[in-house]
Image 1 (cartoon, rainbow, N blue to C red):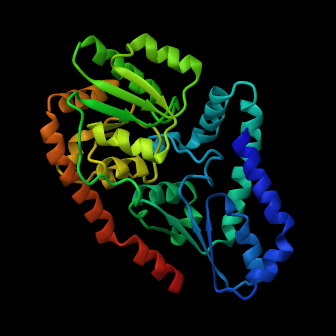
Image 2 (image 1 turned 30 degrees about the vertical axis):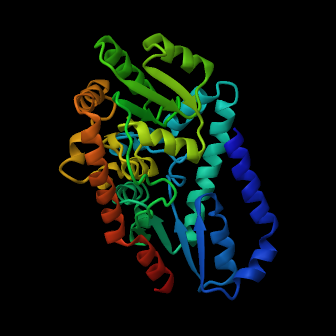
Length: 340
């Protein structure tokens, strides 16, 4: 509910200050909008019908108020509203339905405002494809530009732990694959192999109990929400990122960051993930969505490596992701969009 309130407050502020926006925008050539600031598009066009409105979309706000798209979108798109309501209720049983009701109005308004947008920038081919099939009239206005490389997380010299170690960043989010992860960890513990799994982000008390039910504290550590410095330190000693998402992730920074820190991403074949993991080596670690068995198989493959192999692979991973993004040239493509 808090997220919806923040969005409504932002939109109310934009509407309240439309006269000031008009004065500011009437002689501008281009306006660049991101995320929830989409209502500005309407007032930009009212101020100057010739202004070029660029909307950089990092999620799926025009499709669902919580910006999600469940894999595979081709099968779930008709029920996306119901899925969004279910997730809202699961996350907050008390305010879930109210949140969903407000959210539907937000989605309706966001989609209606797209009429005033000239170019919609997606962050992956797959995100563009999903929006094209869901809102066909937008097709000619859609393009995609990959996100640039994060500049605050790269590790120069990898120092992996002696014990096979994994990091998971999704918290107890259903769409980030928490339930899939739990089933895989339960099977892994029964194999009686040596490993460590660090579970970052937010977890309810009920979720923590579930974690303790399937694994003991010697194997699995709930480390909570981490700042960038502590996250980087943890990345330095872990071997692989666990990313069992069931969401059509547009272009997850977590996958980029894993490679920049020498962590092999074990990731669901969803959204823009395969576009980042498009090498012969990395494609071996793409996981079938919803499958704890496939996730476990990839985890076991990593466990059978040694930390020297991880150190060697870390250099390959960094080279791959940096070359992929730098060769694509997102900054140049975005600059060209402004000047075109």
